[in-house]
Structures are given as C-alpha cells and as structure tokens.
Length: 471
Image (tube, rainbow, N blue to C red):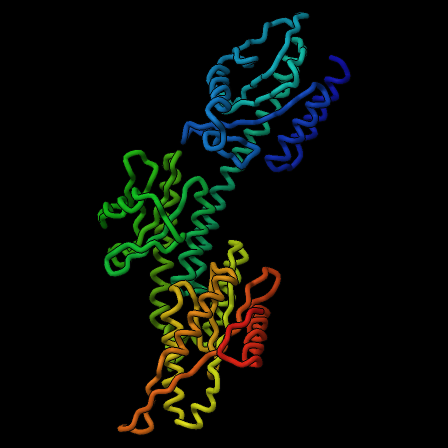
C-alpha cells in the first residue's frame, strides 16, 4: 500500500477519535476523502427500525422521507436494500469484492458502503463523485477499511446516545417534579411541561389539554389542526392508561386526579409510529406531569388571595413581578415577541379630592374591569400601585399592542362611571387614561422593559394625557 493510502487511513483514524458533533464528523470525513479522490458529496444514513425509515446522521437524524423528493431518496433506499450481503452498491448495482486484487479499473458516479453492527447492516455511507471518477480495486479495498472504521464509530455513538436518552428521561422526570418548588400557576407550568416533553419526545408533536367544564381545552401549544387528535380525546376512558389510533401514530395519555381524568397529553406524528419505548416513557412522564399539575392546583387555591389585589381582583405587584420574570424566561427561550403596557388614570387625585375615596375605589374597579374586558386570557394585567396598572402582552409585537392600547383607551374614555356622593345621590363621571408601551428587545431585563414603558407613559401625560405613547 502506498504512502498516500496510509496517510489517508491515519487521518481518518485521527478524525474518528475526536469528539465531534454529527455535522462536523461527516464534514471532516468528506474533507479527508477529498484529498484522495475528487468527491462531490459524502452522506451517512442510519436505518430506524421503529419507523422503517433512513435518517440523515449529519442533519440531526432527519428522516429523509420528509426532506427529499422521491427521485432523490429512491436510489438511497434501493442501495440500502441491495447492499445486504454485498460489499458495495456501485452505480446502482450491488458489488462484492473478489478475494484477490486485480488491475481492473472503471468509472464510478456513486458508491454506497454498508454500516455494520454484529454482521447486520444498520445504515449506509453514500459517496458521490465528480465527473465519473476512475477507480481501481485497491481503492475499493481502501473504502472497505474506511467504511469499517466509520461503522465502529457509529456503533459507539448510537450506544452512547441511547444511554443519554435514559439520562435525559430521568432528568425530565426530575425537572417536571421540581417545577412545583417555585411555580404553582397552571398557565405557566403547563407550557413548561409541554416544552420538556416536546424536547424529550422530539420525533412527535406534543399537545397538552386540560379539562374545563367537562370539555378538553388545548393549553399547549397554541393550535392543533389535526382532527384525529380531538377524536382521540373522545375515546379516553378512566379504565385505560392510554389509547392509540389504529396506525399507532397518535397516542393519548390521560392526566388523572383522584381517578378522574383532568387533562391529557397527546403525542402525534404524520410519519412515524409510537414505539414501545416512547409509550413507556410517555406513560411515566404523564404520571409525573399529573402529580405536578395536581399539586399546583392545590397550591393555587391556597395562594390565590395572596397574589390578587383585593380591590381590583387583578394581580398584585408582587405577583406581577413573579409573572414578569416567568414571561421574560419564556420569551428568551422561545424567541417570541413581548410587549409591556403602563397605564395611569388621568387626574385621579382630583376624583378623590372632589368625590371621596369611595368614588376613587369605584373608578379603580371600573378601569380594572375594562382592562380585563379588552385583553386576552394570555395577557397579564396587574394593579401596579395607586392608580397605575401594568400589563404584559405575550406573543405580540408593538404595532398590534398599540392597537390594543388605543381600543382600551377609547373604551375607558367612553364608559360613564356611576359614583355616589351619599346613599341617595349619584352622579356619572367620565375619566381618561394615559398609556406607555414598549417591546422587549431580548437584551434587557424585565425591569428595564417597564422602565421604558414608564418613560413613554410620562411622555403621554406630559403631552396632554388621554393618549398612547410608544417607547
């Protein structure tokens, strides 16, 4: 064997002992092979027995059926099927190496090599060449050694990844259990649970439903367009731990509280079936999620009065600051837009001075009610202090928040408020509000976000009140 072959095998060995991610590993193998022969591309495909599909190793185990046209993926599947019992598939034809090296050379467009574990093929390496490369038998024997080295590396990777999955499963169980240590509000912890499940069961879409008034309501994510998911909810029965659709692609795992179904976690895929391992993991994770949600409901009942402002029934400032830190964390993690709104009742002191504090309280209650009327369930309003209100508006950009603010400002302006000078005499008054808006810029803290909204509020009051100003 010539020095260049030894050099090539030595460089390959150096690459395979490195700790590289999938993309970099394949890229370095491609680069080193390109020093030996003109190579157009190198790809590694691993067979998934749970779904009977080939996955692109360098592209996060992406299923090639999802990203490749039929005419592109078909030769790959054909090569995978033909390579069993052979050494290569060359130019779409199966090939077995002879026992002796001959001087035969030929033109080659594509070459597929098996990835083998314990004599069983579990993937293929695809080589595509530039302008029909000319190769000989020595090259093919070299590629057989090259393929064997990669097979050994991938065996170790797959084994390590399975071990990592087991570690991640136990981490997910612990993380779901730990949520209740610092959080108790369902609207916050359910998305967290959904995200944890979605990251762990990455091959399937995850939906979390909670039962409200005997109907299932989707809590996470925001939408589901597959009617089969909703049909599966109708089949739930407290006698069963889970149900599967006929094609095993949708599984519904009920959440229980005192033997009653209080919600459901659904796993769905358009391509893959739920494997036995997935089902086992989901059963255990669902039980843990149910326990966490049940504890959160108990805590929420106990603590709700400590988090609400007694006069307006909005979040108090302490609870609002807690929710602010939560929403900032979600926004950073999901890269969603988030807006902040600061509201001040114009000339509120004059209302108190003229009509008394009872009238002032009625004004505060009315404004709080109007705020709740014009916000979504996902928005977070609070009485910030005195006559000031603060609102967090998730999943909303500043232009849309401005429209919401203008509608709210107009609704307050047009709503007459009945106040009583005494038990017999009443009077209707109209009040206005000023408002400042700011959009979160990903670099600032929650406090900085509301400081900018507060400065915009100051500008609104300075420039005549009864208006919305943007930071």
